[in-house]
Image (spheres, rainbow, N blue to C red):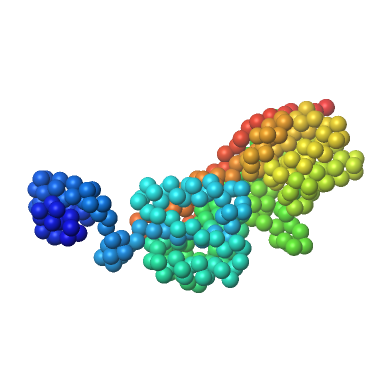
Length: 336
């Protein structure tokens, strides 16, 4: 600062006011121009740490996630968060627990030690969590997770409406019978209560089917991987059932179902319609292309950071982000 002031021929106080952007002092335009030119020529950069002591803000946000590097959707959520932070001239510090709960408090404390202005606590699949006690009373937004009783807003995908959208894709084409759900609530011995996405999607799906005087012929509960979709669809066909439509809980399940249907000599959508969720890359590569309801990870990441800059307390609302439908070629009218 002294160097800039000396080069510009002004006092240090004048240089400080100009470089901090203050306009409440009477400084001539010529002096301002000299200070700014001197700062450029000398490569002056303000001491952000020192400035934060005065402003009580570091213009940084910490994001703590259970898995960033190992999930296919994380990149879009992070991109949305990064771009929203940049709009507000904030940096985003990204950390990952790799699923180790013991690491969460350590990472949170490390961010708080660096005086971040707020924390985004994220999960790469929608679930209920218990935030670390260090975050109580802090400015926090929950991304893709919920914590009842914790004073923070949550940003999650609107899974119930996604289930309704999947049902409408079928009922609007005339499907009323022969509809099976593959994956269901994902209620297994290791996961007896199912999962948030499965429960919400099934609720919305069944709601619209009832309104259309249609119903599911059955729900096959299984894990949500390609091999599960193949195995359970093969079993369903081997049992003598003749589905007209499959609602698969993930695109990976749909991939397996496609293979099982092809082996049985059934075409999509001529014989069996298939509708899915997620919109992974594989959805557009399947033939025919898979109609699916997309997870809005970019918009969720952006919305979570935008909430931080709201005036006043953040509240405890649950913000449900719409899941757009990607119509391709896997849904048709019911066959004979």
